[in-house]
Length: 245
Image (tube, rainbow, N blue to C red; front, side):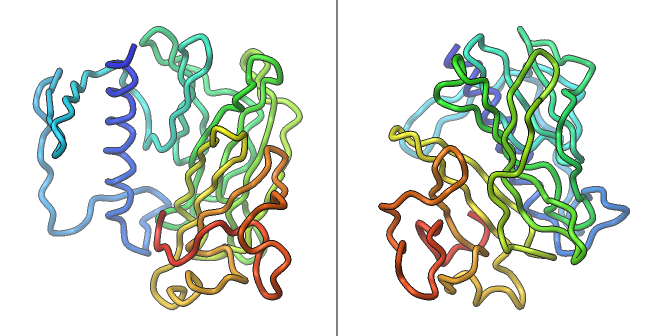
């Protein structure tokens, strides 16, 4: 099981790193290879690597057919939820990709290089509450912003889906978000977009751009966050000064 997890995580990280090579422009809302970087074919799997600290990693192909995979989360039964950047939430069961995406996913904006359906996480008490969390580029009049949605997984459907947090990372900054539940049950959410003219926003405690946020499982800010109660500071902010965390 640990090898399966390592394989899926490595494959997902490869897709994420590839997406970060994109510049701020986009052709037909589809990802494209960075110019001047030749395509290097991957060796036949399985492939074994060793990290700088000596940790061995064995990468095997678990499934194929995913289109621009971005996020990955495991369910208690060993199935995996995988987000596709263009807006689909897929399920892998026993090494087989379900041909039909889950229904109920919010409408996703994909008009800029890092926009789309991003990360997925399952609640630590998923077996009891069935909550699934998604970060995505939410369409707005200005283009898009990054939002956190929550819904209950019921068979092949996400029900009761609603945004529980909507950031101010709008326009070209609306991209690159990850999720992680901490042992205390709080949810960490990253927000990138601190590039070009938005770089100073990463140091602005009153902006969500270029931040790591700490939220309750309902999207509100915990009372013990470091900037709660400080004028000009967003209460959700946990750390600042990031580009695309």
